[in-house]
Length: 231
Image (tube, rainbow, N blue to C red; front, side, top):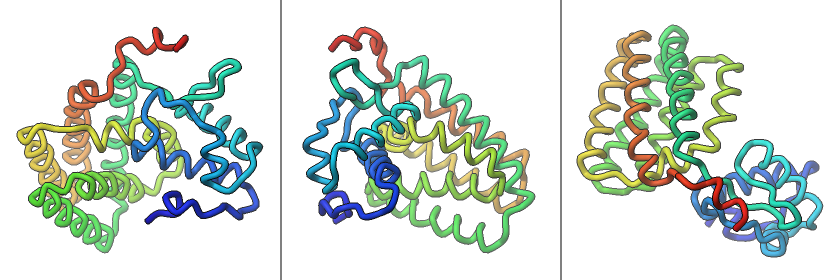
């Protein structure tokens, strides 16, 4: 049971930062669905806080694009239009491709081994059809390669975008054929990483991420997002 599930109170100095982090988790894991209204009373009771830090956290998440502020009606989880998905995935593909190229020049063997271990566990999760575990490990592999680039500027830009797409990217339902294709592509990524082939890894990563766009759009694309503003 997580701290959020247990309803454990928050006791850090900057409450709004911790509250914002808890709410990000709720959004990215899908507990708070796109367009879901934020129930302030429920969340203040759940976190054991007053409304002030909660509202500060809501403002933070609104600036990140995770929440939408509704005039005189609180806030709701932001939806993502098909056009936004297309744009963000394209940028993320470029960022991760750049990270791959840099990482292959800087990554240590211990880091490669750690990523290989995650990859092996991901394959096992795929074979066992454990989707939650598979997607968690998949995300951690991508994040580990980004981290191995040791480029703080690149990481910061990546973090600011990936928060909005994380759930749709790593939890989108796939057919058996699409899932198998994704696993095969990850095998190719690992081959290039082991060889420290930055150019090859970057090319494969860009193609891998771009290839997920149809799956993400089919699961999470909101063609009529602007029409819902008055709901």
